[in-house]
Length: 538
Ligand code: N01
Image (cartoon, rainbow, N blue to C red):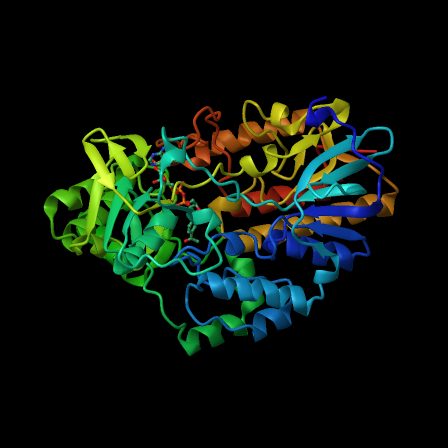
């Protein structure tokens, strides 16, 4: 019998909710649900909590949204008392923060580490889920809450000869705990997304030689990282609740100083002055430079050309600078935030291979072979990203009403309502799922908004004596259409991004996140005000 058809063993425990994943989403879901009196079991596959910040330990890993914003707001004392050492906290500090939260709110008693949820099947007669783990445990839960993350299912392309490589291999998204020393070694990094752009300057500083294999050049802006000036910390903390509320009321949910005028109503000189001020400010505030930056290709091109100009200024070899100049629209792939990325290409021990000119043919026992020849390497770093958003959900065996698997239900792309609920999968909630702003927003506030919404829905069901809640098909279809229609007129549809699933061969090309934090929150609020409109409650 196929594994997916095998009946799970006898039920060993029952909970109101099983939470899958111990990152920031799972931790807050556990805290919030427990606070409402629900019994909760949280399963985490890793041997520690922290999710993204547990797995992504590659050199240079740090957040690309300011830490004063990329932090929990659910507890006023927590946000007042915690201090960040830098504007963009490094991975180790984010992991410390996750552990601090787990201890401070006594979460560990309900967290089970080293345990991967394998399957969840809905028992239609009893309105409960039967959840099975890789440790052979079988538990019953009234609700399943997926806190599995958007970027947690790593992607290593199936290069010919991959297994034959005799050196060390790493994936940025599964970096080992122990220090990796590149001293004296010939290292290859495949990929030039955020993970590569953060790690390349540090690997280059250590390695004997670094070869970067670039398929698509990316836009990166400087972080200008450093300690946060005391007066800024004082100011934000003096009005934290309002600051958070103001950010929820923006398009992308972060403090990026959004202008409401358009690029095209300004002269080239005015535009360049605006872009220069954003470049000096650093970070993703570039997204806020003009209202039409993501919607008008001509406006977008003005920002694109400004950044290309910066690349040409920084990189001394004009031929390398040209290869590093992106040809896609700014923001079509998520912009990167770096410390010294472009300057790294001025180092004598760094070379760039443009895979559009000379594609990878195979991985060999001693390196990477492109159509132009062999690059001998001791180590290969795969900075090749993730099966984003849907991957972490569809790789599990999740079966709703009638035994239908989520993987099959989403064969043509993720279909759900508000990103949180899927028709045919009652009492199954997703935090920061496709169809919600998630990766097109500041993840932590979006996680909190989703968790609060889900927790309040569960409390409502309990209060009304309902045992079952799921999206209705027409509401789900309308939402999926709306998500697509919102993205359709933007430049987000114009390149092969992971937002579209285009980085994974065979994945349906569907725009997954929802563009618009403020309208999303308004819609979620309206649905509740209308008695959970679009949901079947029973
Ligand atoms: O992954 P990516 P990532 N042959 O998918 C290349 C978040 N994040 O881990 O663009 C050759 O962006 C691929 O090329 P192409 C952030 O949201 C945040 O860097 O598909 N190359 C691309 O260059 C980010 O967007 C931070 O043509 C191949 C690279 O690999 C998301 O995570 C830090 C290939 C993958 O880039 C993912 O970032 C890190 C192939 N077959 C990540 N397949 C912060 O700063 C793929 N590539 C908080």
